[in-house]
Length: 358
Image (tube, rainbow, N blue to C red; front, side):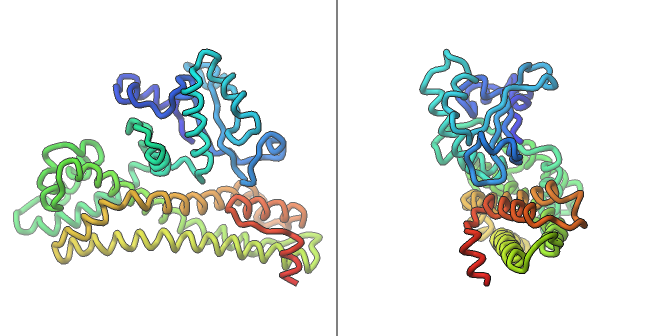
């Protein structure tokens, strides 16, 4: 979910929020965007092969969200007309066109991950305030813990020679890097890594981004095996041998795709660990510096892979969590696995795949 309403509330006094909004239409910048798991009643109105769609909720009241709101899907057929009605007749056509372009790009994303959002806006040449890409407090705590561990390793490397309090210094550096990256107190670290001032702040965002995905990867790696096991061992009811071959074959393709996503993310994370360890062991900042400078270029690939894995796990747990031990009717299994395959862009044709399986 991307709660633009909450971002606007928290940044009421932030000049950058007012000067560099995510969207041009004022009402849209007070809305809530979310990736919505489609239900049967949604399908007639939404044109997408994915299991999720991007939903926009315009709150009826800014002061009381419990009153609900007017909602539309980016993927619905009459989006242009519905959006014009939602943002008001006096909204300039240029603003509407500009926002619709960005909304359609966001709809293509597997998640509303802040690093993917930043990548999309930069790709469109939009200058957007940093507050739109802040991560949640839970995510911040996770990134902070990973960053503190790395800071402690750096301080431990240098601390013996100058008598530093390793834990206290690591805590202070971590706090500054998370909260105040322009603080002059970070100059020794910047010099040690041989960064210029602007280059250091940009690279620090990439550093935190890598650690954010590292946490996402670890969290998914912990929960995915159980989902994969339940998916591969689901018991079918009223299924012919042909049905079983087809459904379990499609499950294998899904799990293979998710395994490939894990492997893709792991390559980037192992690269990070390698260059960071080189910094610690060999006191050579150049490989780490080079990695950080290019880190954000990999966020689109990493984010899409993480988004697909996360979606598959959430989708399966939502649809089958309560009934994981029950037999699944073959028609329901066909719909379930088919939707998940489509959401991962795994094209298939039932007739053709059944013949191939036979």
